Amino acid sequence: MVVPEGYGGRIIYPGIAAMMFVGDYFVKNYMERTLEEGEERKKLKGFILLRKHHNKGAFLNAGQKWQAVVAAVSVLLTIVVAAVFSLSLGMQGNKLLKAGLSMLLGGAFSNTYDRLRRKYVVDYFSFRVRWKRLSCIVFNLSDFGIILGALAVALWAGRTAD
Image (cartoon, rainbow, N blue to C red; front, side):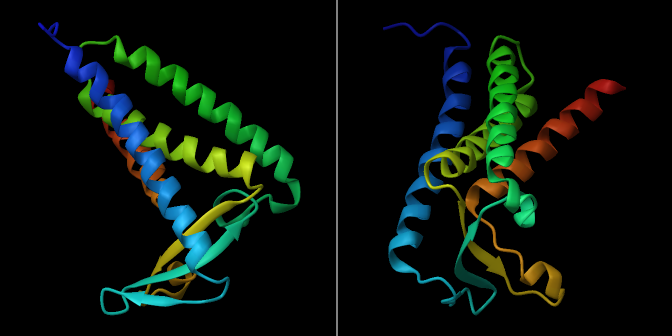
């Protein structure tokens, strides 16, 4: 079978998004089954703390009293990112943009899925650092996909703006 030039590139980016979603989905389910709310497990000599938190809002529980609005905004933003991602797949090059959108989309799908299915997002790890405010924040893998993806898209936009 002959694979047309560029075919692998068009398939790898949706694969990144899917791996982000599926990986975080299984970790969230594992944490839901094995970790009690308020329980803390130390990993990597205590640098990473496993702790389950049900986030009923957006980042840092913002908007937790308006869960339906947060979920609707999450769905809308995920649709927008999916549309931009789909359009980017037809573009030649722009690997940084496509990789960033892949991570952003996978993370957005995962957290939006949680908001719609569970009515909260499962967060499950923190970093023990000197800055106490950061130590109190509980993340999930999708959060890092969203952060790194947004950073990659911003870097790509900054490069092309010149």
